[in-house]
Image (cartoon, rainbow, N blue to C red; front, side):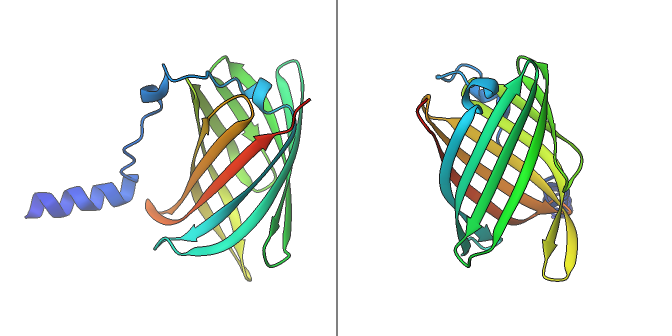
Length: 175
């Protein structure tokens, strides 16, 4: 019994993620961040609380551009209650399968790794809720479906415990 309690406590502390990026290394189509994240991208999604209840719906609009190994992605989220959030991500390519990104609310840098059709972002972000700001850990997974469509699943954690999640469907505009 003691071992079970310790195991559950450790899972809560470290997050117990069963997903491993290496499991996707042979999946097609291969995701190239600079190719997909270039030009206009639109989408829509939902935010869920820790119990799975949908708390918000939103529309997503983004525009990305690259110069050599540096990229900029401007995104705008329009929630169903009319609230608008804007964010500018700055990317630096480290290798073919690794990038770093920064934005105003991220503490330090987002670490981005790619394998096959999957991409995982890990970062800590200051999130404002009412009059308070919380540091939330983001485990952000993106899966390329084809050259135009990408699905994003993002898990929010505080002290290793899931506090919410986001699902976003993105579609790249034709050039």
